[in-house]
Image (tube, rainbow, N blue to C red; front, side, top):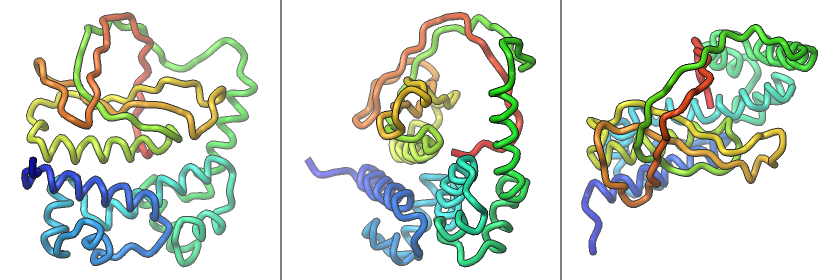
Length: 230
């Protein structure tokens, strides 16, 4: 059976998202990505923005900076990260990183190193503001992600594009990520997670999605305020 136009757009935009994240450190022009989508550059840009909520340039920048943040958390040098993530020099990288994260890359790296040291030195007493809540059952749909948990943003990009293509955004209530493994115990290539969305009311699971059912339970909850990347 031939694909509908919306299904064709979904397939093409998902292909572009995968290409961006696989080649984020390379030069990715609008014309090149339009060719990946098999659309004219002008039509491609409109379709991409309509389905993902961001411009092509923003998607490329976010993919590069997500990778950069992971390298910095591992302690890599700023100049090395700039080169590894497709930036011509450390100055342009620092400017882009600071605009996205609110702090220079060197300070970001040092802050994560200091946090690791504090957590390793901390005893069983915790001062994190955690509360226990009774959370009602909820259900929705999601797509599976395999690999680094810091790259689950790729899964949410795919999820958003698929929801838009199928006209399901009006039923979406809350986005959530579900992580199945302890990253300190499972090697990164084998980590499994789910980029999911809670839906208003029952919904059939469309092709490409998996059903998500979370039973009512008591949950430990901590509120985070700030920029989320990855």
